[in-house]
Length: 287
Image (cartoon, rainbow, N blue to C red; front, side, top):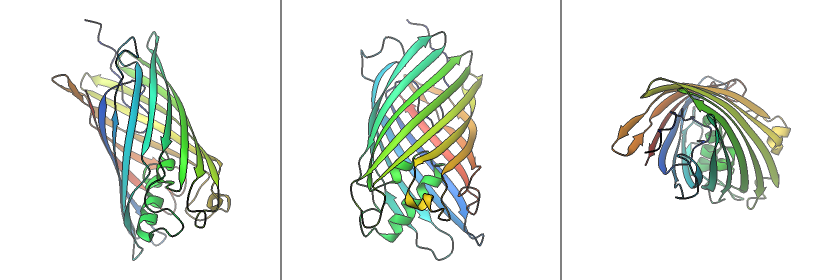
């Protein structure tokens, strides 16, 4: 049999740098406040599936893997504000993973969002609009395009990682080009451009337990009008930190890699007035 690959510390919000057939349940639970320090609570849950195409890579974890991701968000806002639920834009795409040798790995990805999410159009439902407005903050602004339900987004990205000796270091950059396809009366900007980047470091203390931490950065290159006008609760960029443990359990030929992470932001609206505290429960099942 081929040698077993070095253990890989799977990031919490960056993309996996390995191609795999997997199902992944990922939920973020965010507590936050309004300007009066009244509490609110939001949940963003997604289910993603990927399929590694046999014969497209010459080493374990390499090759082509198409992806489908479905996401919902529910918000219970502070005070008497209107909360609600929204199914936001699905994401379809694919990534191609490479082994560069000596522990180095790379991958490229391309995704597209389908603009069918709730809370959009010229007369959006207030509850769904609230939910899909809070949702991006609960995800540290790393998944903005999913919640931009009036827009079709083209999403290219690249990743580079070093994986060896129980240690993982991974960097990532992603560009989001969003083009409005509906809701012109409610959303004045016709296009937006967003950039996200991140660095993940993880280490295996024992074969079944790793600990990871990642710094994430988001910046609008072509911002929404609300951001350009410094509307309260918006920001041109966002820095956040997430960290936590992850288990790696083999059941037959299937790997379960459940992890939990805590996230804090260093910019508003995650800091002020929101005071967001986010706990992420991530459960990948790799076949």
